[in-house]
Length: 158
Image 1: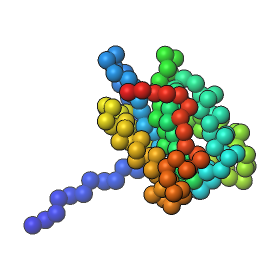
Image 2 (image 1 turned 45 degrees about the vertical axis):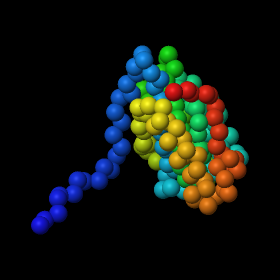
Image 3 (image 1 turned 60 degrees about the horizontal axis):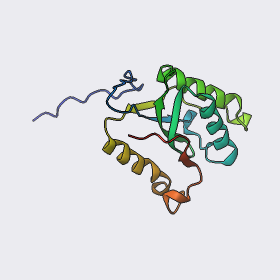
Image 4 (image 1 turned 120 degrees about the horizontal axis):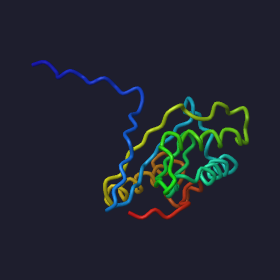
């Protein structure tokens, strides 16, 4: 018996359009990695730079987030004046790069990112539990709450 043919691996993430529905919130889970997966993000100065970039890029609201050494997970929701998600991510990555405290770290970000629109309250809770525990799984903190580079900027409720 022959094995079924393997599907080709995706080299670039697909970015389906965000679908806004009047009967439920719009929440997107985003993962952004550093260029060459350099472990440069998890320190006070860099985390502050990322948070400032998110606050400046205010057409989307950043809710819960975890900044790992080589990638960032965040949940975001569009505002009434939202630009397309790809443009928003490009904007805040650019803002963070221009203000980066360690010039020798450049380039900071991978060109693309991963995103997934959440479908329900259960999905949001499950994703957050997984993301929040990331520092523990990677041996960076004894508990999720002990990791200093995680938090919530805006409350985004399902």
